[in-house]
Image (cartoon, rainbow, N blue to C red; front, side, top):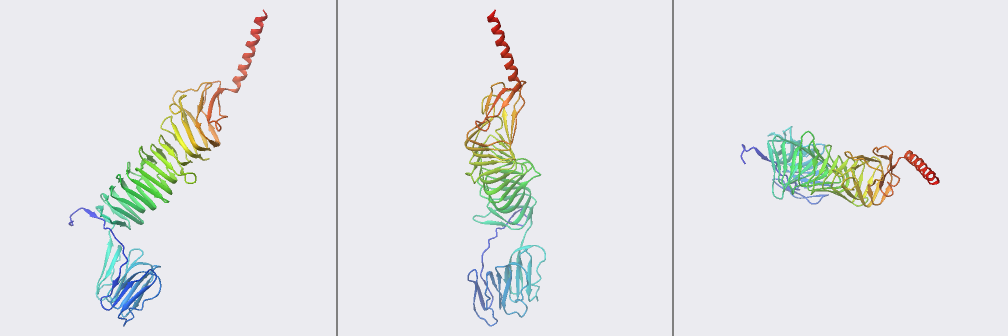
Amino acid sequence: MNTTTRRRTLLATICLFALAAGTARADVGRLDETSLAAWGDNDDGQCNVPAGNFTQVAGGRYHGLALKSDGSLAAWGYNGSGQCTVPAGNFTQVAGGYRHSLAIKSDGSLAAWGYNGYGQCNVPTEGYFIDIAAGDYHSLAVKYRDSYDDILVTGSGLTTLLQRSIDVAGDAVIASMMDVQNNATMTVAGRTTIRATGGIRGAGTVAGRVSAEYGSQIQATGDLTLGDTTQFGALLLDGELYAGANTLTLNDRTTAQLGRLTVIDGGTLASTGGLLVVPGTTLAGMGSVNGRLINQGLVAAGSPGEELTFNDPVSGAGSFTGSTVFSGGFSPGNSPTVQHLDWAEFTETNTLVMELGGLIPGVEYDQLIVNESLSLGGTLDVELLGDFAPELGNTFTLFDGPLTGQFADVNLPGLDDGLSWDDSELVTLGTLTVVPEPGSLTLLGSATVGLLAYARWKRRR
């Protein structure tokens, strides 16, 4: 790849615990997680290692350095140029030169101290650095790049680390696993394409349009956000998404289409523009769904105690299995339908909308088949479709199966004069029936009495 090539490769970083050796007479090795060992020439005390918990070591020519488990530094040995006079602060990496020392701070900046006759301690003051090395009279560091034309994340068996926020002026192609760490943000002006061999894992943000091919994986290990609320069709997901116990937010100006499999394991799946489960795809697990959901595929929740809770309106003709809780609204089907529920609950904040357009359940009016149990609550809104006008004696079985609880409010549509609704068996048999209005019953009774009297008078004559 020459310098004129537009596509840049985001370098995969592999973190290893390294052993460092001084250039002359002392060797220092990481023995275990809590102690150090040193051996060799000890004329300047370079083998007099301190006690404590350490995570990394480095050896200068006549001094040693170590990174403590709390992020501070320790140094011992010859200190003629101040190479053992460590600064205070929190650090992530350390290196030792001939008579100087070098370290990376937790904010990614550099620190150096000791002999500076050749400027080896004049560290750059701008940038984020991820690796360092100290020579006899010079220092080296790998600077994290934060701006790209395009990027390609690739490499067999490698995991690329996105540890700091970057901007990409063109496109990003992720052909292997990319770990997002430190809540970093990758902002892509073009489109991020996740190949079937690739994936995104971690906590942070991938901003812009995102396409994920079948076979790809997106896994949140903390709160993870994908997409762009200002762009139509920002998300084209055809792979697997795993929210785990975290919040996975999908941003699109319109409804975000979920991939072949989306799994929540105690966390939250969220979208301000709404979510779509297309035919042939599955949303599974337990946890919360925030944002309007259109289910045209399968929602497979856990058993009772491991339910999926929907906090915003739910609609669509897809299937529901397992234990589901509806708190933000539920409208079965795309038009009148029969929809099956296993364990379900309508909470006090839910509004259930049932449509009536005729007398045939599932074809002309909505019906819920309850396999295990349905707890009623909140509001029931019954709406008429088109010009349908229920008549006297019509009965609609809205619920078929075990019911508990009751609706706080039931809103029923208007009927023709002289007719009213009987909802006395709604929470027992799940039915609504059209009956005469109470006043109509009195008038009917009076007319009947009059007819009988007239008939008796005729017989006497």
